[in-house]
Length: 169
Image (cartoon, rainbow, N blue to C red):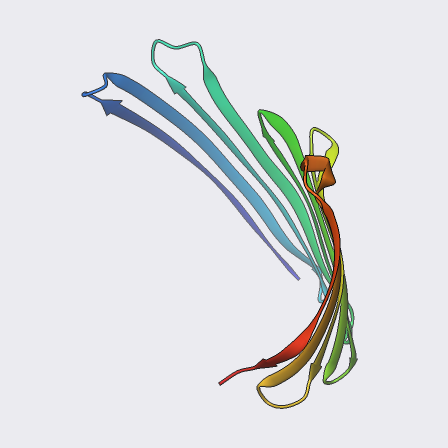
C-alpha cells in the first residue's frame, strides 16, 4: 500500500500592449492517489482556476473535482468508477462506471454506465454491454450493445448493436 499527495499552484500575468489588456490568472491543483489495499486504489483530485482583467469587475472561476476508484474484486472481476464535478457557468456532474469480467482466459464481458448532467439535468446517458473473444494472437471477435440517450440535451435516443472482427498486424 502507498499514498501519493501533490499540491501545486500557478500565477501568471499577461500584458498585451497592442490591445492594452492586462490579464491575470491563478490556479491551484491538488491530488491524492492511494493504494488502500493490494487490489483497491482511490484517487481524489481538484483544480481551481481564476482569471481576471485589470480594471474589470469580471472574475472567471472554474472548479473541477473528482473521485475515482479501481478495484480488482477477484483475479477475473474488475470494477472502475468515477464521479466528477465541474463548476463553470453551470454545475456539470459526470458518473462513469465499468464492470469487467474475464469469464475464461480469452472471453471478456463488460458493462458500462456513463452519465453527464448539466445543472442536475441528465443531458447524456450511455449504457453498454461488450463482449470480446480473443480468437488468435492479434485477432478478436467483438459484440457491443449500446443504448445512448441524448434527449436531455436536445438530441435523440438510440439503441445499437455492433459486431465484428478486429485484426492487428
